[in-house]
Length: 80
Image (cartoon, rainbow, N blue to C red; front, side):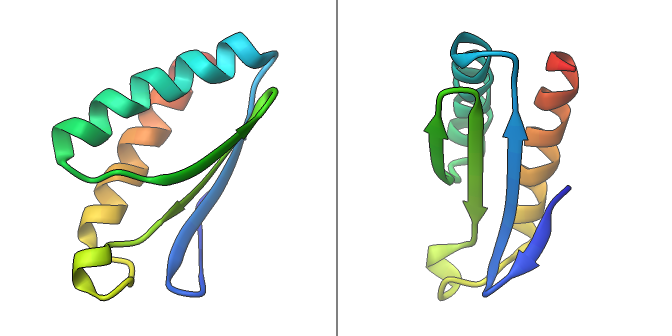
């Protein structure tokens, strides 16, 4: 689901409605805070889009991004 493009890991997740999308974002926020790695993300109604890269490493994709992407995928599995 994730693709690397322009020094970013990108993915889009769709949900049944806004409430489900927001619940997903809330859970992801706890993982991001725990990893001290905060995503660039966007939410419109039932869709959440992510762009991950590590600003401290010069705005490139690092293992830190891959670890957060895996956590995001794990959270998404709960919503399927």
